[in-house]
Figure 1 (spheres, helix red, strand yellow):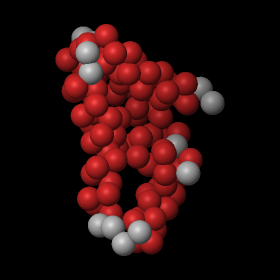
Figure 2 (cartoon, helix red, strand yellow; figure 1 turned 60 degrees about the vertical axis):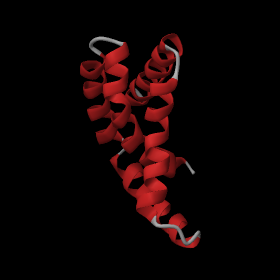
Figure 3 (cartoon, rainbow, N blue to C red; figure 1 turned 60 degrees about the horizontal axis):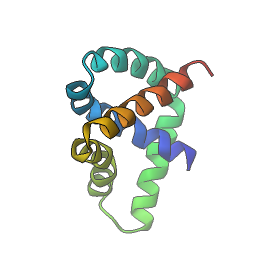
Amino acid sequence: FLYGTFYIMSLSLPRAVDVCDEKIPGYKIRFDKAYHLWRQRNADAITKGEELFREEAKRLNIDPDLYKSKRVDAPRDAIRKMQKERAIEMCEDNLHVIEGEIGK
């Protein structure tokens, strides 16, 4: 499960950046720096997560790209629909998750 989470996060978090940057000026700059370090640190888990994700899609007889698309776009789409205060909170939470992972 954890590996799959890293894989989905590696795809979904960057897709939400533009929406978050509209709500929080300067968010993209902060995110890009933290995300680069987070991705480097978790490269093996992300790769393993992709393998497991594809195996799961195959087991469920689902097109892996369609399955991935639905899971990856959901956080961005949710933030887009939220009231501004809640969207800001969600964006900051996303950033704190990857910033917190950097120091571990």
